[in-house]
Length: 300
Image (cartoon, rainbow, N blue to C red):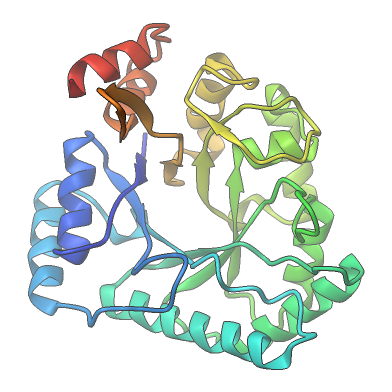
């Protein structure tokens, strides 16, 4: 199973990201190339990159299993403020260039929010922007993330994802499934085989290049988008296990984005990543009902 989690990209850049992933027992990972809420980006350090490539080769980790996530501040769906829309296009282009320098093959993108505009206008804006951005000879492919349908999000259903892909002139575009988002958007993840069949008919299963593996705090069709730790939400462990071991997606990286676990330290509340324990649980295939306690005990 190709599985990992979201990791940090800070002092040692991708080398630090890799070290964190390996500490979780992962063979895949996802990163931002800088803070997702702002535009500050440090120059790529090639020494860190070369050292990371060496360690990845030693641990049999392919660059195909390293995913970048585009910053949240990018919104291609609304161009009422043309300067902001053009900025989103320019910034995403720069993020793709950083990915190409790092050798990262895939960047996950929230399609955008129409913010008061009709959904079809938002989708048309996304298509227009992506046709400015995507080139056939790009080495890094944009993956549209399936969204929960919160507020005015575009990409809330497979039909909207298909509309965007069909409108993009280049074939160099793919999809990232998010299990929490799909549940909250109204798709029954307990019937994942049927969902994949529907996806294949509409879009093509070969377009799926990443899966965000998250449980959900909310019931199906809630349009809330609140992730939960594996097995502790409304999807449940058996459903998620069925997804991550699906034979049709065995070569697709599975990335955990589950919540950090909080620990009280006097008046302070500290948070710690659950990924080492969730990855181990998924590898074993057995639900640990004491998972959160075990995480807290480990970090105390």
